[in-house]
Length: 137
Length: 177
Image (cartoon, rainbow over all chains, first blue to last red):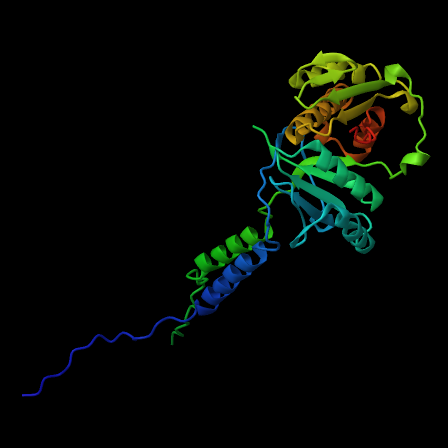
């Protein structure tokens, strides 16, 4: 007696139609994770809160200066001295004439340091500034 | 003889719709800026070397001098004022100068001590900005029946011209030792 295998007549294939989409998603995921970290912030800071704040319209024009709790100043990827602020910012201004400097300064900083940085910025002709602040609810 | 005509099925395959939707979602996730850049905008004056500085006399009535000391106490034109009252203090003065020509508008001068806390300074600056924004909103409401943000750019320019935000940062004094 011969046994006949009873098998369903369906195809045994994995549908691959959505494979490109899945790949695209993976690609997008990696794109997202890589672009998020532009600059490593090396200083520890907590922004002040304010109500009358505005959004900076053009993100491309922004250049950041961080000032941490310890009073250290960071521009781009490195900690800089106060005297170095002027040449760096001057070079930036030559690349982008209407640069907006976003000052991300810690709440507890003394105004003396802030004024000093502002004086440096004035010397470098970076006159458009923005005191970064979180919205107060 | 009857011809049997096959009717083609007219259905769009929707199985990949979910994927397309996910892709779109991801696209917008990417396109939206997560790190919102908000803050108080300001334009610094040109740098003038200390020996070239000239004192320009400004009419006393035009000036609102805000002085913040190291303890966070605020003086507006010599009178002690709590930080959160700066707005109410300035608003009537801004309103009273709406119809004056542009060389008679209010100038708000903010001066701090070297030891003043940055947060206090931002709070004070915030109050000044709020005062201006509220006056602008009220004026826009009277004139056009809308808030300042909802006006067309030409109208905004008119309001900006009527109520310009002039904030002057006092030249830092050399440190006394």
